[in-house]
Image (cartoon, rainbow, N blue to C red; front, side, top):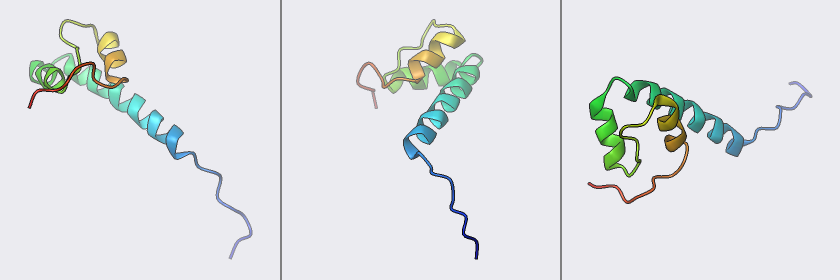
Length: 69
């Protein structure tokens, strides 16, 4: 058995890092997927007509309107 302790983890920071990575990945994927843009719009994210960088910024925040089924 070891006397060393595991480093302190910060779940909130880890979640934020994961959200940032997912937003970047989703924005890249949406560039070539009109269906994904439609899905984001249906979820309440205003991404239509935006650049990849703008889509990424939008996806880092909560939706701005109520999603539609």
